Length: 113
Length: 111
Image (cartoon, rainbow over all chains, first blue to last red; front, side, top):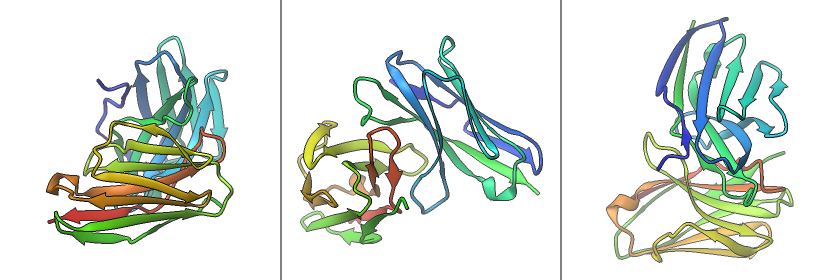
């Protein structure tokens, strides 16, 4: 029973264009959402997060949008750079237990020079 | 500074061995975590310690035994593992229980 879904296993984008990574969740108790980036043979690196009281959070080239009614969030990377090529994990935690961070299956992003 | 240090980076152990994975953070974070990640899969939560007390155990088999000696250290004791336990074991910490910061991981191979 996958509570956090990332339906695109992979995505290819041209350098300089926008990358849009999508995430859907099923648990209405999820209250806090995060995006992580992972290179092979390394631990996940925190990128950006958003609380359910917001619908947008921006940090440099990274913007996360949250649509609570649709239980959907997306990560926008603009402009995309070759160094952004990695696996991106969407994650969420419920208000009842913020320690219980649950990860989606990941989307592998390739940015083509 | 969000550094979480894990040792060893690689570990090969037999099914009858006893070994330990170690994790350290000096950021004063109140929560520490163990996750397990298999190839092409997401990290799976195993254990959470909050203020040095075990707060979450995700029904992990008893051949995995966590220990939190103090607020900076987290160990994972391994005994009688199976080959299917081979994976990347990730330690993480969090100041407030929402954003968690991972270490580089320990690659475990059970032979």
